Amino acid sequence: MAELILTTFDWVPETPRGYVRDIRVRWALEEGRLPYRVESVPFNARNAEHFLRQPFGQVPWLTDGELSMFESGAILLHLGHRSKALMPTDPHGCSAATEWLFAALNSVEMASLPWALLLSLGDASETPWRTLLDDFLKARLKHMEPILAEREWLAGRFSVADIAMADVLRLVDRFDGLATYPGCRDYVARATARPAFVKAHADQIAHFAAAD
Amino acid sequence: MAELILTTFDWVPETPRGYVRDIRVRWALEEGRLPYRVESVPFNARNAEHFLRQPFGQVPWLTDGELSMFESGAILLHLGHRSKALMPTDPHGCSAATEWLFAALNSVEMASLPWALLLSLGDASETPWRTLLDDFLKARLKHMEPILAEREWLAGRFSVADIAMADVLRLVDRFDGLATYPGCRDYVARATARPAFVKAHADQIAHFAAAD
Image (cartoon, rainbow over all chains, first blue to last red; front, side, top):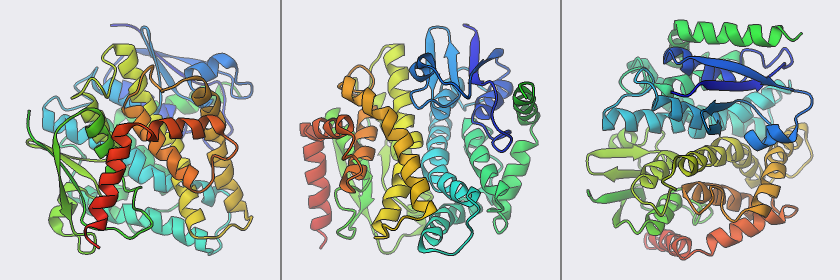
């Protein structure tokens, strides 16, 4: 097996710490007990090599031997095929984990990230726009709530789908968006209580703090 | 091979016609020359069976023998593994198509869909929110522009990544968001000129019109 290298920023401001998307990859690598090392690229001066690896100038990307891969969702799927701890191996379980991985990113996060971005502006006034984004997010959470109240993990057992969904929902929780969704809140709590998340989170915090 | 069944709504209002996400699946099925039939569920009265198949009460979903799958991204990936016309078979090409599929949905559409939703409200006033969403979309398009100006297709040759990316960008185009991105606009034009798209689009329009 080739060495896995996770690349993230050398430093980020205080606010995004603990929420930079490399945490999804760190978490998966820890769950799968896949050895890896972390490399850094400058946050403040993004060079051409960076854009070759990550065309939007963001992080993370993963190097697996000759493969270099961006997009946290694609990396999670790739790691899912490298460790049974991250993905069920039967066709139904694998299909369920894959569809829930996409659902986390393309159905829930598509509503939650713009909502969080706007809230981070500090504008809490009731405009038609605010209402639209609130409603967009609610349209997702109201359906996630009974599902997450009923099952421990999305695809029968813990998988990369839960890494994506729990990470998406904990950003909503950060802005108090889960107050009326106890099933979602409890799901975030049990996902982030896993030792692999605890280590991934501490490692990300320490990584950025080391550059202060 | 099991029979493929695509399920979509029986009817939708005028505005979303031609843009309902079943078009991504129709397009892929046509490109891959995979035989399929289309089934319908009520748009106006979504029942429990619908939510079992698609937990957010949306469409499409795909049935492939015993597998039932939701999320257009997951379906595209699944079909990519059923037809060489939809996905390169070498590891680098397959990895590139997968990361660009996620990029279309989780990097570009995450910015473009909320932007389009807000524009569809008809509110074009310059508020901090409008500026934020404009900037969020621009931060993606400015990096897609040189890439799409330079390459014909995202992963070396046409793949499911292009189906997702072109469909995401043509919604931006609908709201005149590609005016200053000729590389993106030309990419949408060459993607939607493909016979498989033309048939998929005509079929979706005809499907909904039949229920009027």
